[in-house]
Amino acid sequence: MIIKKIIEILEDWAPKAYAEDFDNVGLLIGNETQECSGVLVSLDCTEAVVDEAMIKGCNLIVCFHPIIFSGLKKITGKNYVERVVIKAIQNNIGIIALHTRLDNHPEGVNDVLSKRLGLLNTRVLIPKKGSLKKLSTYVPSTHLETILEGLHEAGAGELGSYSECSFTSEGIGRFKGNEKSNPFKGNPKEKLKTEEIHVEVVFESHFNLAVQKALQDLHPYETVAFEIFSLDNPNPNVGMGKIGILDKAMEPSDFLSFVKNELHTEVIRHSPIISKKIQTVAVLGGSGSFAIENAKQQGADAFITADLKYHQFYMGEENLILVDVGHYESEQFTKNLIFDFLSKKMTNFAIVLSSTKTNPVNYY
Image 1 (cartoon, one colour):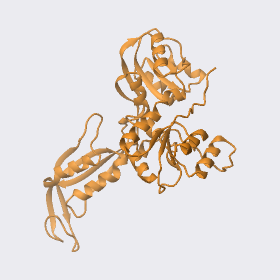
Image 2 (cartoon, one colour; image 1 turned 180 degrees about the vertical axis):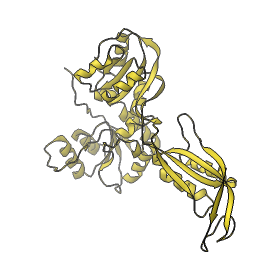
Image 3 (cartoon, one colour; image 1 turned 90 degrees about the horizontal axis):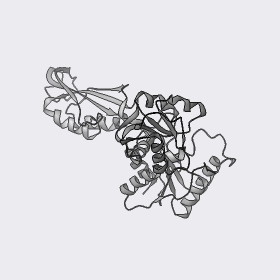
Image 4 (cartoon, one colour; image 1 turned 30 degrees about the horizontal axis):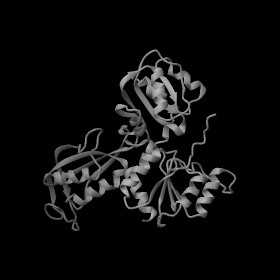
């Protein structure tokens, strides 16, 4: 199997459209036409991880964090990033990073964290904007159901917990072809009017090409009239963080012990203990201080994240307990998520879960 095929498998699962604009995801090192001997899955890509890939016969590393985040003007081996790049290139090892493609994924980093803590009735904490489009087109009634079915199969019509959503209205279409036209109804150069159905469907932006292809393939008209709009509506299925409820409310001290035990972390930093029990919990893996206000506005009793600064711990303001579990600890189960997906998708291929410890933070 060539690396390009694995890229396509990952793209179908976690589209690049889910990634944030600032991020650097996809194939960072390597040639997509290269034959893949095996995949090593890791949270980070360090020199030790590249060594492990070599030992285990894997020439592709699929990791969560990108080893190259900002531009490299020189590659001289002066820091760990440059050394990883040099070692990977010298040994023909490709590196793919997923990062915010899984941060925003409906079943990604934060879904795994929510399930680990047993949260129920979860929803996205910060729905992603700019990821929805709407198709508006006109079809003859004889082809309505066929076209709708094709559009739905291509990914259109998903809205929150609902699928196969569309809006239709009846109208009259008017047109006149030239001598080169081949109209579905009537004759060339004849001015015609016909009953048509106006169809509108919403879809996630990464389905754009598939939706257009389905429309063109199934529509009977020689020239299909359609419009595609970019929507400002937030996507309820895709975005940063999750918020849900615990089965039973807990005293704050019991909740902190519970989190520490479930996430296998040695140290938890937290804001002052609040006077109410904890039941509504928000989570955001990695650096999540930007979501504190979102957690407060949505009524969270606790917000679990990482990398909080000193003054940010004041922002709980006695209504919300802020819990910093550590960056690695909040994302540690992500490599298992990637490994499980690839193992199920590529059953007859070598997928290896990295055993290298990549957490750079140690506790004394």
